[in-house]
Amino acid sequence: MPTIKINDVEMSVNPGTLVLDACRAAGVDIPHYCYHPALTPVATCRMCLVEIKGQPKLATSCTTTVPPAPKDNPEAVVMEVFTNTPGVADARAGVMEFLLMNHPLDCPICDQAGECKLQDYSYSYGSGDSRMAEVKRRYRYEDLGAKIVIDKNRCIHCTRCVRFTREISGGSELTVANRGSRLEVTTYTGKSLDQNPFAGNVVDLCPVGALTSRDFRFRKRVWFLKRTPSISRHSALGSPLWIDHEGNTIYRFRPRPLEGRNDTHFISDEERYAYARYNRPDRPVQPLLHGAAATGDAVSEAFQSAGTCAVIGQGTFGCDAAQRLGELASAPELRYGSGEKMVPVVLPKLQTSADGILNRRGFTERGFRFGVLEELLARIERGEVKAVVLLHDAAFSSVRETDLLGRILKAAPFSLALEVEASDLGRRATAWLPLASYVEESDFIVNHDGELRRYQKALEPPKGARAMPAWAKALAAVPAAV
Image (cartoon, rainbow, N blue to C red; front, side, top):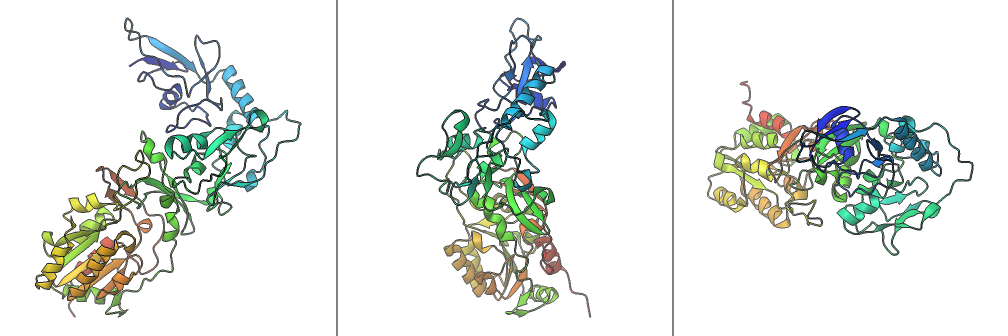
């Protein structure tokens, strides 16, 4: 590998590495707006300028690559980079002054305040004053469809959003119109972002708050929010995301990029806006037995006296839940899997699986067999199985599977359903227990590629709801002698 020097510190990198990435690997921060690891570099913002020995002008580190080492001298230093010279400092201050010429001072009402690169870089690299005496240009707010609002006054024309719609989502809804001082990001005539299933990502990409989500707009200051690492339950991808929450309420889901994985920078709008489903503190939390309110101990006693037990685990729960559920089965072969949701593949480069069941692989590795529920129904009808425990979420079962599960619950002498929210199917069971949702527990899954993905507890469950491992412990406990 070629050797380069960054501020007189030697390091080895792969040939073709961007200078910006090499500097970051060396622990040197390079300010930038237009650069994004998942998008084509265009060097439009000019904020990432560095000095390279032997070159007459400053170079953009987001487009300059490290050359290979010469064959006759592989140990030679192929490039010397300086990021802290007076020339670099003056260039960055000049870029900041240029970007702030027309930018409004509306930080107190801007949703990006607190996570705005323009604020951060102005403080760290700006000159502290402005020579702009003319009236700043003004645009009206515009709706880019029902989900995204654009404030062109704040736009610094980094074109991240434009490149995303061209290179990632493929719809090319956004473009750069006009030239010079009238330059603006807008949509092509007759187009909006409503038909783009990944449109919400332009809000994450925008470094300055020009693009905001109508769903989150003016709802919460970001410095009040706590962020918890989690995953999406949307599909077997298990996309990593951040849960931003405060006061036991979730305000948004955001992508949580993994190092070296460009496909984790983006999530679909269906995943992004799914957080509202988990803001349900008023959901039913009263255990039921034969349709009437009961205690958890009463349900446990009824379960223990039921006889031979089979379990049905839907693969949308964690591996710890799968393990504890499986231990309730009277025999290893009485572990069955459920879940038939499929996800339309819109972007093959991001969606590598159409399976809509998050942890199917994790359940399979713990002995759960999918696609054989008819076998369980036959065993119940022959009298081989007396009790069934169902771990279920109605949103991930097809009509066909729901009908089959209903027949299983009806045929079993005793049935127990565990759900976050009671469904029509769950109410048909002999007993019902309230579950904590996945944002109210910590666990892990194995996605369709075999990668282990962990998620952590963000909210407190309502009183009475428990995670599957806690219910399994209670159901397996032997009642104390009276």
